Structures are given as C-alpha cells and as structure tokens.
Length: 310
Image 1 (cartoon, one colour):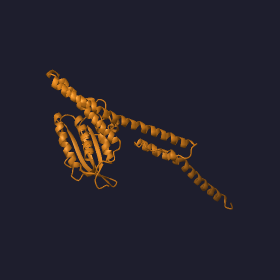
Image 2 (cartoon, rainbow, N blue to C red):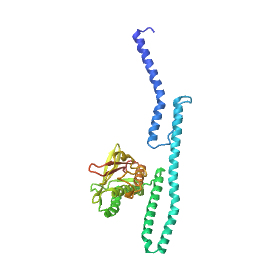
Image 3 (cartoon, rainbow, N blue to C red):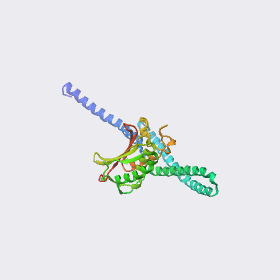
C-alpha cells in the first residue's frame, strides 16, 4: 500500500470494475439464453429447452427456465395433436367420400332427368370436398418436416412455362390471361422435388387467377439475385385483384386464413393453397412473401436457392 492515494483508488476501481463485469455476465448469461430460446420459439422451433443452462435449482432464474420448458413442451404437444387430428380426419373422410361417389353414380343410373341438376350439385360439392381433403393431407405431410425432398434437377423457367399454359387455359373462362415475362432465362436451375415445386407455383398462380379482375393479366416474372454467397431465383406473381389489407399480409400463408369481403368463400378457395406453397418453398430453403402492388393487386414473391450453392 506504499503507493500514492490516487494509484490505490485507481487500482481498487479497476479491480471492482472487473468483479462487477464478470458478476453481471454470470447473472445475465441465463437471461440471454432464455431470450435466444424465446426467439427460436417465435420462429416455430418448439423443441428448444433451457432448464439445463439456467444453473442450479433454488433460484428464480432456474425456476423460470423450468417453467419455460414446461410451456414449450405443452405448446409442442398441442401443435402435434393438431397435426395428428388433421391427418386422421383427412384419412377417415376419404372412405365415406369414396362410398358417396359410388352411391352418386348409382343414383344417376336410377333417377330420372328431373334429378340431374341436384345430382350435379352433389357431385360438384363432393369434388370440392375431395380437393380439400387432398390439400389437408399434403399440408400435414409438409408440416411434419419431410426430409427426403428428392434431388431432381429442376429448370424453374420450364416448370413455370408449363404451369402458365395450364393456368392461362383456365383463366380464359374469366377473360383473363397468365403471362410469363420475356426476361425469364433458362439458367434458373435448382435441386429439389419437382412435384412440390410444381404444386407451390401452381397454387400461387391459380390464387392470382382466382382474384384478378376480368380482362386483366396475372403476370409471372423470374430473375436471379445474390444474397451473401447464395444465388437465388426470385419468382414474382402479380394479380390485378383487390389486394390485401397491410395487416393481413403476414397471415396469408396460414391455413384457412381469409381476408373478409375481398377473399371469402364465394371465391371458391379453401384457404390452404398458399399455406401449402409457403411450406413447400420453406422446405427447399427458400422464402415466400406477399405485398400490395403500387397500381393495385397482390404480389407474391418466392426466393429459392439455385444449384451450385451446395
């Protein structure tokens, strides 16, 4: 202690500051871990657990970690139960629906001409129900996180062109068109499941056909971009319909979500198509967003990693 007073004060301050720093780090580390886990929960990862990183029992932070794990486990259980319920309902409905179609054909053979209109209506509703069941089964498979997507080499431009032809034929009944921008090139090639990608693009394009105004076009564009070291194919589908309120844009990819008045059941949609598309894109490492176009209508943008990024 044979130093001048100011040297002693500086030494004690430095030592005290270091002690306080490491003490604060040790106290806030569990909180940071809990915050990271909360972010993962918000992102849809319900497998995260934090109790083992919260320290010894008997303090408030450790108790909070255990309560967090209990909450995460219960949420995960509820979501798994919901997925199982959708899957089981979809499977169980297939058998009575098949019998209904057989009975419908028998009724057509035995009924007179007066019953034709009613039987046609039954057949139409049966087809809608069958389509809904198929979409539910696809959704449950995608949400289960399928790992084997296949490693097909998919030329996105050729796939979009084939889908455009079919969608344009359907749009003709509403005096609409589906166009593919001339700037789309043949270099947009990626590895993945051709069937899942086809279904994703088809659902988005048909959604645009369903809501675009008569005598307008559903416009498809395809370009490439770079994000960090990843090359992306960016596909945008724009319709000329009513668009969507801003607060709804982040909810459009949720199953059964509809925007009141603008996108209701009268349109003929089931509210599952965009959800299937978003999950199929996400399984391929891509992303899908929706925004309102400046001149009216909705733009759905899909970004997918191209071949050569692996």
